[in-house]
Image (cartoon, rainbow, N blue to C red; front, side, top):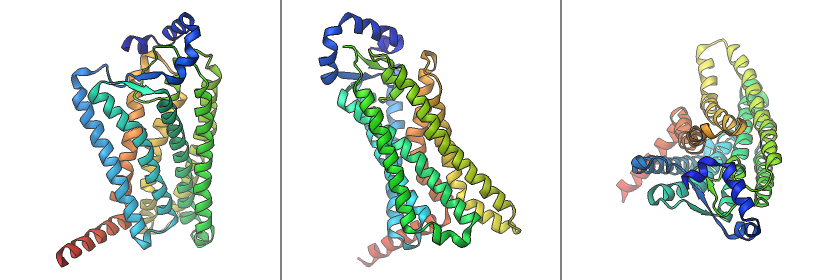
Length: 335
């Protein structure tokens, strides 16, 4: 199986040519194989523990932040509205990818059904695309709050926030449906091994029997249009934000303004740069192991860090957490 993942396209083509009559039926009901980190059997348990800890921290952290935002009335602002959407999104897409990776790591069973693979692709593309637009919306929110604060309540009203959130999800949904439908039309050889820890689009089309050049070009163009455009919008927002912050006369005012968007900057840099780098660079045999590590950064590490960064660097969230803990303690003591 490892050999199949390493030899890549040549083996796929050979198998397609060898068994042309059985491919269509096999594709519908076949089981694909995710090689994941099978090249490191000696540290399999360590990898399992690390992934499990990241998954639990991600779920617990995002659930905690989501609950805190819902229970604290003063956090019912546009910034925390988008943060709440971000926590839900992170929970969804790590839950689609990491549990399967945990099963593969601990049991060695690399099989994933064809519908399961398409499902992973759908939620992966949906989550990545929607997160880009959510981060852009959050950058716009910070721009309005810092650069034109007198009009903040008028511009960033509840209706605007809901429309932006729906727009983010709608674009993400249509984009993911496009990829899921395109890749579902591909045919695969009887023995199909994907040299990745989830059904990453480039790794999947790489083993298909079809000419997937157009899909590869589409991925690149889509990355440029959606990824880079949103990233440039975020950078533009922060250029105006930084310019406005530097004009503030007091150091206390500058620090307060910068602290309100520093958490967002950290997440943008980690998420955007790693995801854009992986999805835009050409697929090469020699870099596949490095690609897995890079994928792990924005699939597991960034969602795990999101609640930590937004909580530890945000006094409002920390204060809200302390208030909730105090209420729980008081109820326990009263009982």
